[in-house]
Length: 467
Image (cartoon, rainbow, N blue to C red; front, side, top):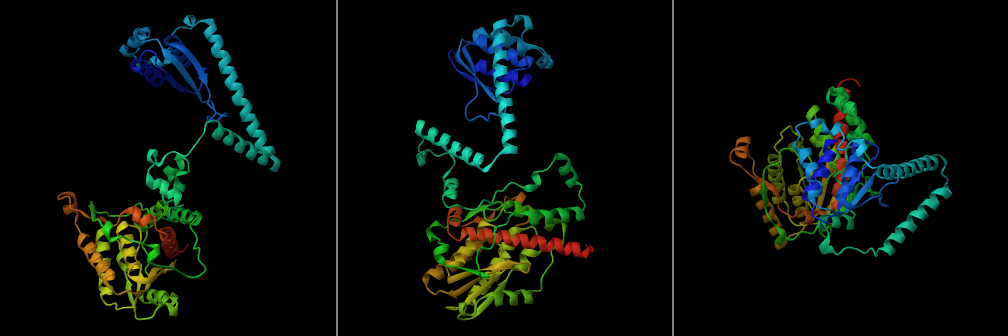
């Protein structure tokens, strides 16, 4: 095609004399390919066709390695003619007439094409054979062979760990691997379909969308609740914070959370779709409080138990997330003011998807002797903070929460768009939130919460429609 010709021409225009050019190709059977190959043979001292060991043998990928560029003057007339023409259909014509191509050149290209095509066919035939006839011994032999090849490669080329200062993937990604953090940026399963299926989904009616969401959530390989009891317990050691790392990071307010470091983004997408299409069923707040109160072991609560339920704040249709954060912070602080030493605090319906909310959760964990995550159910989710600690450290943490509230702004559209209004995005660094032992459990709980919410919403819709 013309694009392939242009990339070759541009390379020849910018290459210095004596330079090297590597061109990736997939076929040598076409007219344009023959002409490009001949052009390169004229422009370089050496032209070799290679297939690296790292290239899959079953595909037609090859690399043309050109060494010793003879200089721009050798190809300038042809390049000038190529770019000066106004005929954009030149890609359908040959750069050189067939009679201009030497017979020994054509013979070499033919032998090369035959060699690589026969190799490719042999590999494909072997793959088909192994696919249908493989045995356990074959699998074992292949595994041993793979290990042997990898070991030989490492020893021959002295492969060693790269110095951390030379890493290009970033410290956060390396630490994620080191701490075996859960992956939250997952590939959406609904992308694994044909274009025609995607177009049909665009025209889905509510019922079709409900059934699709139901199937997607049911097929999601969720992180299971890994504890035997209904409550998992943590202490401040699992969610350490440093007051000196406090930094109020302001920015454009978030209206709807579409991605998070604390939950699988695929599930967040499902939840947003369900909320935008269907009414979210509400549970009786009295029954909800009583249910979660009964989940707390009696021996865990020594003083009073103050309950704060913010479920209704986050269940409404308001798309202003900052307002929800501000309203919930007000309720939380009002409840905390009632607490005395050794009292406990039951927080219901507080989502842990944003850095602000997770930061608030970490602060609360450090204000009590222990914290319990109650297993999420369709009725909702809750956290219980047992035995408030009195002292200067707790007072400092309370002051931090009041400071956080002051930085959360309930802005209208005009203030955001015209006056560039900002609200609080975070107050603790993301790495301080992600690399604590409680992080994995936060992700697991968030996934369970959303799965339950979507299932409940879809189930309610289907029941209302007699399905």
